[in-house]
Length: 591
Image 1: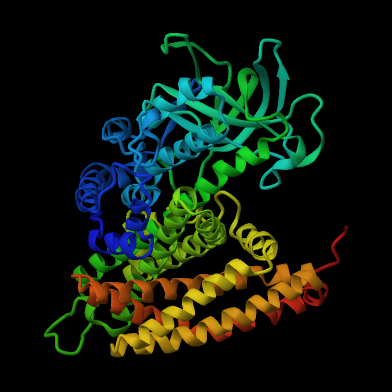
Image 2 (image 1 turned 180 degrees about the horizontal axis):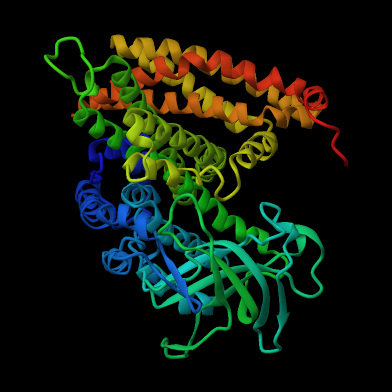
């Protein structure tokens, strides 16, 4: 089924969750106008539905190939990338001085949602480029910026992140790749990197690798990591491409999904690179890339939710089986009550996931561009808290909805040729990317929640309580029920937050055992809050989406917020049993 973007739902989330007009009001985005939203989204949808979506199944079937160190993209991908780059889509949120369009990040997020829903393997390429651009803007030298940024932002060149090694997965402090000074300001990079997404390909003329490595006298662990820029082709003084660097791709990983995204094993044997930022301070630069990537991966979760919902609905409308009330003869399965319940639940979860990611992107815009220092700090706190929720909650829900799509398809969903099967296979990597979701949960409670003693979460809780009051005041019957559900749910979140803060101080191991359950509860409640917020503001604006916004909030409240008490109990109750249960259920573990 060809993908088509839900433009009204996306625009609603941009206006009422990302608060894109508030970002525009800062004066930081001279090219932004609210009237720009519709035409930009419409053009992006044309690219996603007409160019990228038709390549998705073929890309899954054929994949990328490696021969003699050269990676060839799946059929049609090179031409599609050229169209994508020429459209200027990569440059939407980046500064005009480097060829960008200086528009809000939240708008770029909305555009990328469409690309990811239409073709997840393709969209991983620009996703990595975004992280490279942000790292160079923040940490690059003037020479590096002038040499590389314009070409990356135009899409003529692409970027890749080289973090993982065979013996160092999420623990980047254990990496062994070496960077030895050449005596001319450059370094010789030697080592092997694995799981490098789009690390080698033929869709662009140059690839800028950002590589983590250690200099000779670097301290052990994460304190001794530096970040290096290692181009595939060197750049001459006049901007033309020179000789090829010495690194190469020596293998492509065989994966269960995202077959058209080349996941490379990269071999560096004295490849020439240049330090980005300060020596031994590569972790800070890495987290610029990582945070950008985490939000983008959360967006992939949204995209999976949307693709799964669209696919399940289309199949349910077409597939006839059994009898249904009010339908003569064999009924399309969309008439069956449980299928209908499944579809409306999927739609509400999708919009909740979209709202979380867009709210995070909107907070990022305002954290960077608000004129008031106090506002900057407030929105930065909100962004930091939402990043792990966006990444983990949304990607987990993506897998849930992909699974539901397979269930709607029934036996056909288990067949390799079905769209639902590809969606499910492609989705499974997202909870692993850029720090597994357990790492996101530990980040949420161990860093974000603990660093400010819960102030950021309490600020969200206060906003939720205000939304409960606002929903009640609308006089709308559905929103009154949403308010009641949300009132109870936020109370359970507050109780869990207090327990988590105390447990982090008293017994960190017990607290961390409940971290994943806490993130799930937080995502549920924040998602319900943001849907209620959208519904209230849509009703106030009397816009065309108001009825759908209210319905989505109501469905999510009834389907998800009603589970909040159990989620709260799941945070603390099992955590205290983990050590005893391990000793009872498993053989002794050597230290």
